[in-house]
Length: 170
Image 1 (cartoon, rainbow, N blue to C red):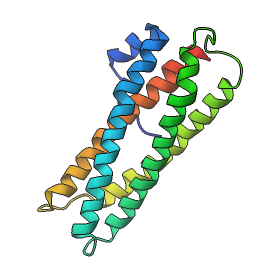
Image 2 (image 1 turned 180 degrees about the vertical axis):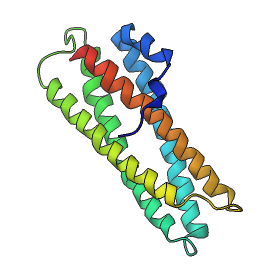
Image 3 (image 1 turned 135 degrees about the vertical axis):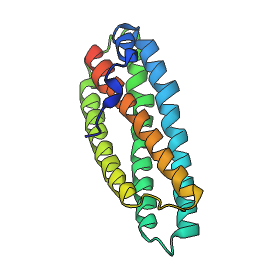
């Protein structure tokens, strides 16, 4: 599991525990889904560039690029499912956040969080093995920075969904 240092001493958690559900959903989509999409696109581009420029000398970069691709594909599908199925349901005034197929969907989404976390942990391991050596191209250092930025955002994103939103509505 991704260590969640983000929640320690973070006042954002307390605010969202009592904020209106539509505000929390909007915040998750506008902040964390957008951040994830931007960071994933940046990470994919940087990893592809690293493979093109350094892949012959560092074949491990190909594995990292491929793992990044798998993670991004899975997490994009996950966010789309939330945005098209779960979140509209939660924003329906008559739904009240309970009943119907939603508990099953939430269970699937939570399982998705676990699967994507597993992919991310594997990616973290590959990235640690491929830490840029002193004198490495700037793009490999930027790839590591992008990875760290995405990890921090995902910690907050997944925590807000599973520990705040899902607990409040189901």
